[in-house]
Image (cartoon, rainbow, N blue to C red; front, side, top):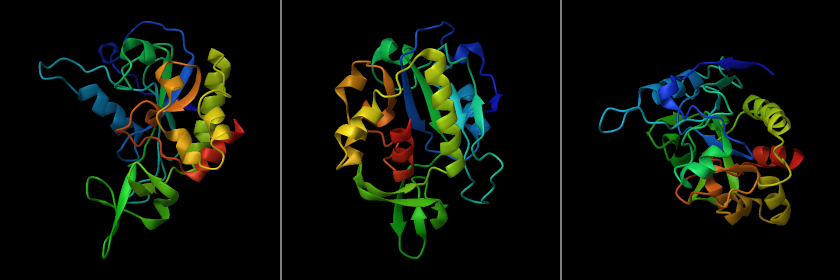
Length: 229
């Protein structure tokens, strides 16, 4: 597994080591390049001009929706040491964020179909049909989502195994256990979960703690990966 480093300034994350027991999966709601995501974090500021310490440890690149460029597809980039932390959940205060490692997949998220145009993301640009997945059921109000790529999921699989081993995170807890409980309706495993909110260990996704988020969506390929961990 190859991990590239694009380091954020220390002012962009909390420079202290915290015990890790959880991993949270996200998607970026943006384009295919991890470096662009990280540069956005590097340059964001609050209303007083101070750095905003919002980031995840890892970003995994995807495929361009405009040029179909695959140069970044599946590339893993680390922007600060995963033992350190930043506010990547927008909930739970310091505790939930400190205990967890965040992983972002470069992906636009939910899509709508517009006759005559095709599949459109939230910034009103077109996503090619080959990069679209139709979910079996509506999830957070949408049936169509930007598809996580095979290379992204392959890299994610490697990274999850690595992190679970390194930090003794129980990969059978979290989404994998919830998927087993919700075998007839896997999308239900991606809903709000009190175990996630209470900082129980394991692998989770942002939608397990935020009703207003759609990352990550219950795509069959991602579900298969989680079940196989």
